[in-house]
Structures are given as structure tokens and as C-alpha cells.
Length: 65
Image (tube, rainbow, N blue to C red; front, side, top):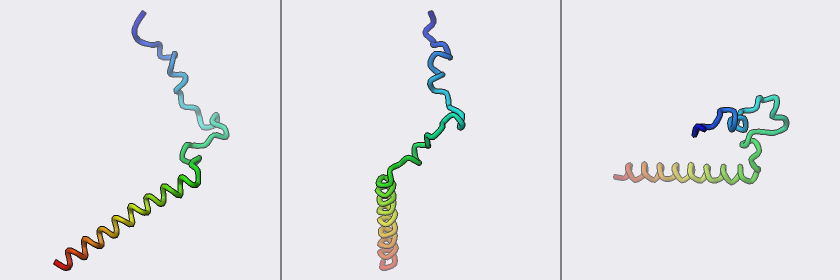
């Protein structure tokens, strides 16, 4: 007996299904809860706003020197 598995043993579970066989299932990201999307966008917005404020403060400090 060899230490290697037969290719057909486990790979069948991992085969990618053709699009027509997926049925009513949707990709993972399209199934994200609306609250999760809002929280994610709020976090991204907060980081962007903090970056803009830091940039403005840095430019202001540079202009005063």
C-alpha cells in the first residue's frame, strides 16, 4: 500500500460545481447581513475620515513652520 491517496478518493468532494448546478445558492458576499454591511462601511468611513483629518493637520503644521 502506498502512502498516497488515490486522486478520485477525496477530490470529488472539492470539485467546483458548474454554475447551472448551484441552484438558488448565492455567493458568500451577496448573503451578508445588511447590519454587517453598515458596520463595515462605518468602520471604513471612520478610518478614511481619520486619515483625512491627520493629513490636514500635518499640512497645517507644515505650513506654520
